[in-house]
Amino acid sequence: MDWGMANRLSKIIRPKNGRCVMLAVDHGYFLGPTEKLEVPQKTIQPLLPHIDSIMLTRGVLRTSLPPISDVPIVLRVSGATSIIGNDLSNESIITSFEDAIRLNVSCLALSIFVGSKYEHQTLANLATLVDNGERYGIPILAVTAVGKEMVRDARYLGLASRIAGELGAHVVKTYYCENFEKVIEGCPVPVIIAGGKKLAKEKDVLELTFNAINDGASGVDMGRNIWQSDHPVAMLKAVRSIVHQGFTIQEASDLLVKEKKIEEINTVVVKENKI
Ligand code: R5P
Image (tube, rainbow, N blue to C red):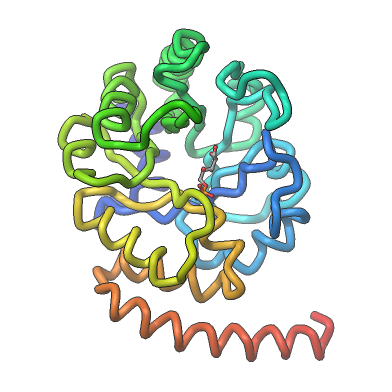
């Protein structure tokens, strides 16, 4: 692997332990102003010190993250669909390599829709991105998007993840499922998990993270279960403790309780001082 590719990849998957805590805030690219991500800058700012990388679009990057930030950027470059449109799988590449390089990104991300009407188009998008990624030393993260008609099981997610790896993706993001170790076993590159819709209980998020790591995931690319929480910083720190420090679910729960109190005090201080 060439120096540039290895260097960028090391900012996504940390070399010291092969793990990754990526914050996903790209939801607006097809969902618009998602709950608690209405003003991305406000959502992102307190979370920045606790993440390894951030996944977002160029529009949010340019408007919501200061250029002096040293957090590695995972730029979403597929889209051009919306939640009210005809078919979410009908994605194109929406950002040029030239602009991605200008933005000094560490990784590019796109969705693939295996089994959908536009399967071929999205897989061809991946192949083209990988060709350019190899040319310029930028790793590609393939997101295995799951259409309404697909079942989120190890068979489907394993198929989609393997295809992404075969087509040259450097990292794959998928969903956790039963028999997740099969998904990991069949995928030749590191796999990270999305959080999905906000779960009912905080402990569910910790369980999801713990089980995924235990089954071989390299980390998380989590969004709603972090920033839709009433205590996003505390939740992020608890998830991080599992990914990077090997905390058990109970240890992470204890940390969450402690960090929630700290976050509440900090919020009062910020409000009183109008910081
Ligand atoms: C979905 O298409 C987006 O790429 C999100 O980044 C992804 O779903 C992860 O976010 P969440 O944890 O909210 O599912």
